[in-house]
Amino acid sequence: MNQEYFNVGLSESIYLGLPLDSIDKLIHLESDNICVIPGVASFWAGVFNYRGSLVWILDSQFLTVASLAETMPKKQTLLVLKPQIQEGQKKQVALIVKKLAGILTIDRKQCKSWSATSALSSLGGKICPTVAEEENKQIYLLDTDILFEQIYQNSLLSV
Image (cartoon, rainbow, N blue to C red):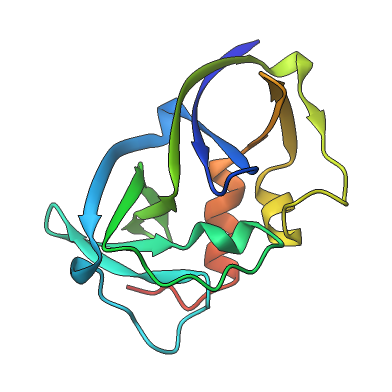
């Protein structure tokens, strides 16, 4: 079965495939518009106002084993995911990405489970259970249902 994915780079060598039907919008946001919230799980970069609602921003580095001590660039590229209903409330998150690499059609039958020695963290491995090979690159395929389940279990998200 073929499925379309939006291919994004988290770093020079790590690519993530997000199901195209799970993406609400791609936006560029000035870092000054991101409000950092103290005391929440470290994978939250902060929140921003999107169409009158607060959207929590995931720092994509939490998916990788590499710890990059980078300062936040002046402008961020965010993929806003379609809202999910959690505990009767509509929740929406955005993911910071470093590079946009286009749309891919991937045959899910050709995908495989990835090795525990990969570049993804254990949490990254839970939410990206399969990997596809495209143009000599491994693209970790994100499962948005598992993503939402994991971030709500592992954070203080209650807004």
